Length: 491
Ligand code: BG6
Picture (cartoon, rainbow, N blue to C red):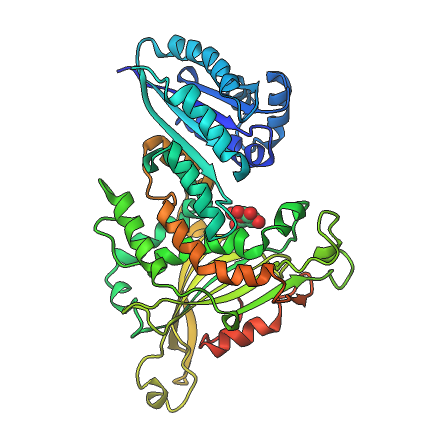
């Protein structure tokens, strides 16, 4: 058995994303034995000149865990070549060299190629074209598969997405492209379909007859952290809601796919996600509360507009609570609440499915408070699944109290949970597209937010100011209460 050679070509290798996410994940894969030293080539590519040594020195501080020896072995695989993104000749000349290495390592076997685009979308098409002409179109018999990993943002609204998508489609068919949404690589998000579809106790209740509301929350306890320039032209809706949180929501709400795992499952799952996204109405202004953070009351953190890279008069939202309505037989009338914000009181992401009260329970217990059951899946930190349940207060009184059936991963499982990027890159190597976003999913998700985004861009809505470190504007709680979410505290 002759294992295939794998060439990983990281475009934008000297950028932030490559250093913080791509290379550390490749290192993780290498030290866990998924990348074999004498069968792997990792070539970084970007515009600035840099020697291999300088490049390795820059990567080193980002490699966490692992021993010095493991780091050294990995960095020895990493080379760096300079070139323009729009130059077929530059890419071709790098590949002349790489082909020689591939032949050397391949010993006559197959070569697979992974192209990682860690670059802004403005250069997707120029580099996509250069790679196609210089490498894909000239691939010989020895080349097995070629795959492309692409990073968000995939446009800024429906129109810009369509343009980018059709330009990319002219170069590559859908089976080449793996659009990363790293939330799909998180342990608890991957757990969703197993939890939903393999337990007799959830699926029968998973509909408008029993579910009162679904809330997906994303909170960060830090601000834009030097990314203000990027953030200001995107805002919280484009940064995390239209992509990460809507992806999570589509997995919560979709109908059962033909298959969750195995042959064909990638398209079966994505077909169902698109269907549910297509049943969501575009967001209305009255179903949305926007916010922007002020300085911390003790002066320890500056306001969003005091960030040097943000214009002083910026009205870009750093917080949003949005209620989405799915107009299909399963979910008609159930609010899906998405709440996301930076510079809040804690860092947390979770999904809460709040159920209606047990019928007649008010009368049965003589008007004593019965709390709605809630299934909570905590994505981070500390992955957990727990169910808020009513039990008798231990002791002599017959009093219902709310308690939790709790599965905390840290306490239950003694396994290392991989970073989402590590998991997703491995899925690309394995050729599994289920956890990557298909073109039609993106179209549907941009269509939901584009009218609202245009109103915000046109200055028609001003964000409500909230203090750094708070729970966000109180208007957010008023909105969620209005649509029927019963706040149990702690969120
Ligand atoms: C990124 C956003 O996609 O996701 C960031 O651009 C955000 O603004 C990040 O902080 C959150 O990811 P995670 O995995 O830390 O929750």
